[in-house]
Image 1 (cartoon, helix red, strand yellow):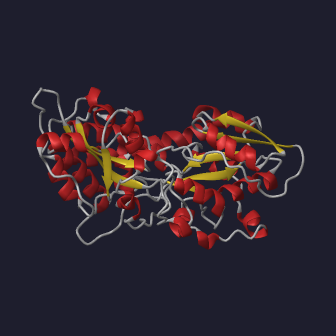
Image 2 (tube, helix red, strand yellow):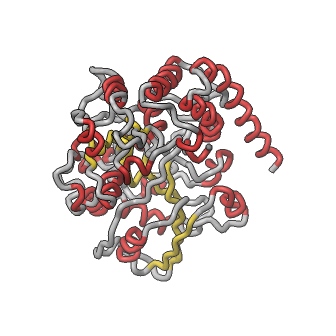
Image 3 (cartoon, helix red, strand yellow):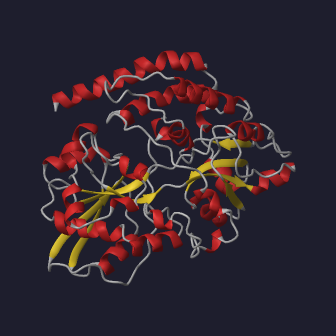
Length: 417
């Protein structure tokens, strides 16, 4: 169940090989880069080509091994991560290096980044523990097959959540008896996107205790409303429907990031397009999409200066422009609305790609370092809400104790260690 409600969407950078050489480098420097998932070969090629004098290694980091690797001083020099998802909360301040001195000495212009993206990597006292390298652009994707089968008009840019929920409710059973779903809120991380759009956290960052709010209640009610009108409530075995959208054409709409749904769907002969992320209401233009893949330097690294050279290269105009052309969300203001977005990906031609850039970034409050643990504790309750086995009132009543107990247990374990 916990896997269904993953807090953060871990997206590996879409970078292919580049032939240009980076800055002047020292000889025989050994550097390692780690990420929670496999680091793509094309990203490795880009770095290797730009830094031929460095001896690079690439590692997969498993969450349950992070602490022992840190204690044994075996962590990689550079960590590729999404919103600190790879790091146990009590290690965050020890684990990462404050990049502020390197940013100052290398004259990196922070005004080139949207402030909301830097905020996700900042510390309580102004530290900057990472630089964003890829923004997770969000949108509402739709599969044309079910709309055509039911002769229902496609979604359009600017729809509100109420519009989308109403549209989803128009789907029922296919004529051949296979079940159709109006909107998949879960498979692509839509639940987290919805919480971000409403700037909802389940913990008070000052007290690390459950934070009840009208915004949280509104989100919970919206989730319940969606699944009440989304066809039959899913069973425990069918809480997510990724194959229905990307392979079988039995799911109409899907909240996702970047261009992956279009490319993956095309590989399965599905015709998928996109529109803007649903609006809160008719006058609001606040979307989701503040989360980023970021680059961090391990505090135990013996080659921090050289590691920062790689980070600086990956956030350079050269690499960011290349990423934009290959369908990756840029973190630099200069390329945010670049007309060349996705030009090197054939499946993206004639798609409504501007929808990825139409919504404004939400300004998210800095969460508690235990927010991920709290979110996982709340997930089973949200699952029961979706299945219809618990009401909105039940979920709100039980969430406080579930969240607080999980955080208390996490802190107690830290003391024991």
